[in-house]
Length: 522
Image 1 (cartoon, one colour):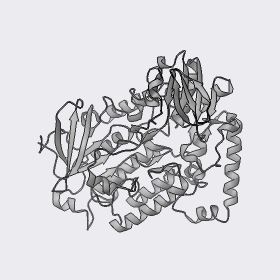
Image 2 (cartoon, helix red, strand yellow; image 1 turned 135 degrees about the horizontal axis):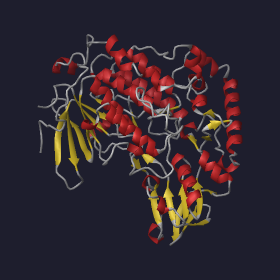
Image 3 (cartoon, helix red, strand yellow; image 1 turned 180 degrees about the vertical axis):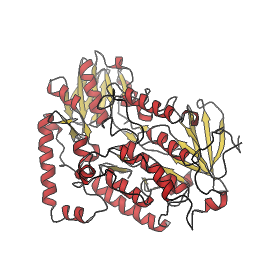
Image 4 (cartoon, helix red, strand yellow; image 1 turned 135 degrees about the vertical axis):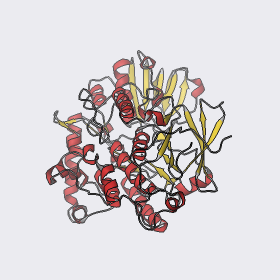
């Protein structure tokens, strides 16, 4: 048999967001199937996409799910291998593996005449037949790092070396003993350059504009999450919603905010020994959307193992060289394009896409819900400095909505709120034009979600820990239990699918069903 009416959910993607979404929704009684087009779980952490030297920007404590800490043997800042092991252990601990269909691509998502979703999936590659399945809900968890952004550089046919995106640098042997050029200035660029500096014959970093970086430890012993991932530190970054104290701080007392960031800028430059050419023009916190940890990069740079060239790659000039827009020529055997990612939703049909995007930007209430498509959700699109935590709490929020016990404004009011937040984002994060970034505003964003769900915002036990300790995920491990205790049944005026499909309160012990059963196939 198929899933119970009104409760069948398609989750697209088996990275961090997809896994925690599947767990939360299943615990609320939904029948889940997760489609992952790659042959393994993990998203950006999958072995097929992880470049050598990749490790988390976050500590193991803050990059964990609320109810599943990393083993004590894990590095302070987990390597890609350790993150993969953690995610697989999470899958096994909570029995998620039977829900996941690997090597299965979602080809299209359309709405049927009954307002359900028809999802066309293809397993095993482009030559295989597609199957059409029906779902009551769809959750997009394909991530904001799903499609490599690769610039088209003139003269590519002249170059006889290797040219690849940073996500394709999975074989360390590609750089060993060779002249390597890394293009970019973000986390992946600095990581790849640091790796190549240790193993290549020579390494040059080519970049247009530098980004702000930070050390993993301040003064050699204070881990950076104790500094930047706290409620106190968030006070100095202006959110789109301000309380009385925040309004005072960013108004009459804004000189104190400028002094705070001036001090941090000086400290960061001193600790990492950042040369002038790598200092961004915009002072902190402007430009913080690309903030990364880069100890290994600066170690290599300060040891003289890296060359820097500021400029844009203009063309390939011959079999073993590139030219910059400064007319400077750089010899290379390997060119690594650490040029970031673009976000696309090729599987949404034109109608759905028009209701999700406007003027090329995602329009999602709370970065989760397109107001006019109430059965469609997005998790992981509130990209932040603590994406595991923001994704997990967002999954609870969406599950609360799908079960009909979350009361939200009407469509017009949600659209107005989206427009207001996007206007703020234009000013706060000018480099994130697609509008899905909340950056350092982790506590403020979580407060928005908890306030919507009617749950307590302060969760640390005392004000000192609440404001000055990092936002440990464990503070939120009882969200599911709290939700079910406070809101056990659907309220009056609940979403129409509840009355239509007979869904009342969530079951805490859902049965496993044959998830690929389809009422419609072709």
